[in-house]
Image (tube, helix red, strand yellow):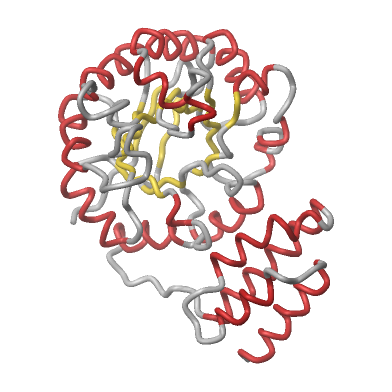
Length: 330
């Protein structure tokens, strides 16, 4: 396939350019600063995101840890906000911009019940006028570009995603990311890339395709079907922080990416664990367990190692297990 062009976004005073067409999705409980550090190792120019931020909480001063360190990171970092109250979204967006956000993204696609039932995330798919009002007000309140992430609607029978997306474009969205499922589907079934294609054909602003992209083959096929300007990688990157860089390299340079071997995966787990423990103390081990469980796969002793790691009672014990495994792999 042809090489993708950089994506240009003109904000309300500050323009941005996305040089990498592969974007790392915000992932709750995953895409913290340490995880982003590893993604950045393989994808230095990719747009990454903080974990999704509750706008009202950020307005009140809670959840600031998710955005306060943005200016210290290399490469573009976006902040994705969710809420249904325009004033809260405005205040949170202003705070995120002042913290160093590369752009602001509004989540209108999260299917999680506790978010949707309060009017945020995918609930806005049922409120197109409110969704447009939020985009219009927030885009005018900040200088950096405003983007939106949506789904194909609340459910298949009552949704017109093209009309919804056109309304967001008219309200001031600079880019729209489309997950190819409805809210009712959650993450079940298959992403409808053809529906994303129809949205892309109807809009003047860039469109990013999301859903069921697990590797470079998926990304290339998705881009061929949708003609999108780029792709967003979500859950497939859990345990594989190299995936965004891998897909970008294989799409853009059409060269085979050398995937991490067993030794590199174990080394990555060890580094991740030590960084989490340094930042969070013993609680860092609890956070690290899921990452180690995801990453320690695809090599002969992986299952045994995972079994031991999830039972490690202290960071010291887990570190010793990983260090011993590296000795065996040398």
